Length: 400
Ligand SMILES: Cc1cc2nc3c(=O)[nH]c(=O)nc-3n(C[C@H](O)[C@H](O)[C@H](O)COP(=O)(O)OP(=O)(O)OC[C@H]3O[C@@H](n4cnc5c(N)ncnc54)[C@H](O)[C@@H]3O)c2cc1C
Image 1 (cartoon, rainbow, N blue to C red):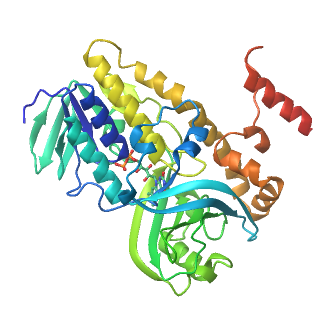
Image 2 (image 1 turned 90 degrees about the vertical axis):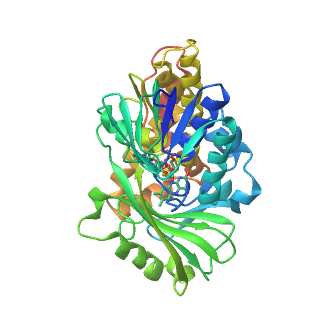
Image 3 (image 1 turned 90 degrees about the horizontal axis):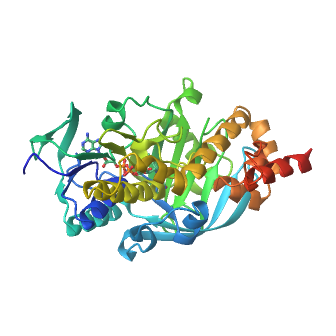
């Protein structure tokens, strides 16, 4: 493979595969570099992905890639219609959300296949490192690449983000079991909040079928104290007053662990010829930990900007503003909301009170990062045309 390549994409997850497909489709010469021997495996994800119309409501200004809208049935393991949220006291509230649960192994391979078909060179089992404008490859492919553009889609521990000088933000640490022979509600994706079982985060049950589910816990290290994540998850499975009844006695079929960025966007997502997309850029909704949709939208934008830059149509700094335009506001708000909820998370009593104060509809809006005013977050309007600022201020006045 020749050293002078136009675009090198590091990481073949949803962000990298999407970026590689889009840039290749638009005529760029692309290498997609992935350290895993098999793209998509091992899986480190719950696979929950709202249907396209739900995603569009979550990010009204984002252009969803086709691959987020029409996912082949072979990549979808299950569908859910409800989201149910439990307070620490075991009360639940639910609201309709049409969800798909994707098989990440199949889905990532599908996305990589699309990138290859668009013309990208796919390099699995190959690790990249970045020094002084040179990508060093080791593994199945070794040698150097001198790309005109590098798209860092290399996940939550991104080497590309680090080389840009971004500090490592706060991350959630997650442990997940695939469990079989359990007595769950196959129609509902469930979240459980509790300082005992998931300090500074939540536990979840994502159905994969009638008696099969991904069951996990994600917390922030700063809340964990001396507790160990496996102990927390085992205790959730065995002892949680609601979930324990469904899960106890089930069989653990697989164990997955991973990190989820929890601080919102990295300080800079573009520097010189480097772009960041997906987890590498902190593109994860802080209210839910869901990162697949943002990763794919960011990947699409990175691919478009890279291809346009190579044709002399655009400066690379456009990338940051395009990201902001499409989902920056929603991402920032999700972090604001998470910070508010953090205070309540310090005590189950406060969390129960917050839970009681929100209707199911408001809860859905909070999950979509749409009603910060309900949590007491309001800002002054910037000027007379700032309708949202004015609306927030009115809501705050009405509440007091
Ligand atoms: C336990 C868990 C459950 C989750 N559940 C959900 C969920 O239900 N729904 C949801 O939307 N999100 C979920 N997420 C988050 C979601 O998995 C991520 O946000 C999403 O995968 C981000 O995609 P990405 O392409 O940015 O990064 P990734 O999918 O992490 O892909 C990055 C890729 O880069 C590769 N890589 C890293 N470094 C290098 C290197 N130096 N050289 C070559 N390759 C490299 C990695 O091997 C990896 O394949 C979950 C995360 C965890 C940990």
